[in-house]
Image 1: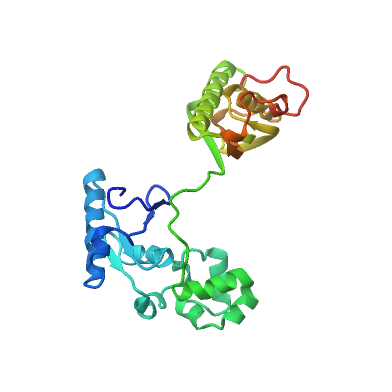
Image 2: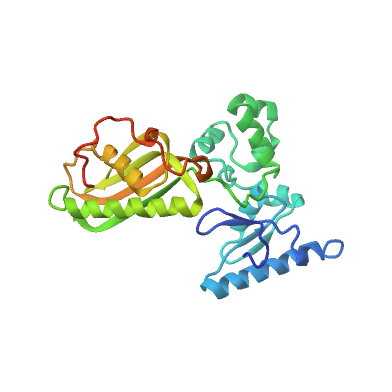
Length: 289
């Protein structure tokens, strides 16, 4: 995709937004056949995806992110769908309200109880009434979304909320009999997490663990520190404090470690101060895992 344009917003393994505004094939077509230029670029993208992965993809071409999301799903699979503002009454208003990304099950059920089954029903509703029913922010958003309005930019970079590492075992491990193995695995997770932090130049103030026991029972614990840390030893120490608050009465299938409350590494002293250590005074006899 980066060969077409660098303005790409990654939304997960199977979804991206691309801003084609300044792509040469599109820009050069303005004043002649702009939609033809966009379609040509879309076909180039589809061909590139096919060559690189062997997979097909559906592309929605629209003036904004909200409409492009809807357009990409209108003619699945393996389609290129163009949606303009003039197409909204015929193609968008007849759709069920849940087709708008941002209307979830609860909002959809409430809209249905109010007699609003289609996007067109929302568009026809008095915006003041929508605000009375759903509040100022969501009420105005429903009105704008039903008319295809969306001013969100394509975001190419965002700060992470947290960074994590986890692993699933091939067999359930016993907290006592497999103690040494669990300790080595947790050491490796902390070292990998520290490497991730160093590469991305972050440190964090909150360390958390995730444990999945047999029977799919998931337990999490967090430890908030006085100052940000980034080193494997400091992360491991905080993990040990978290583990002390867990009852190990079942076998383990998964372990994970996470660090959040992130700050840029430039804000952290080269040698973490004593305040960076967990506030709990007792350090002895920490679990190995």
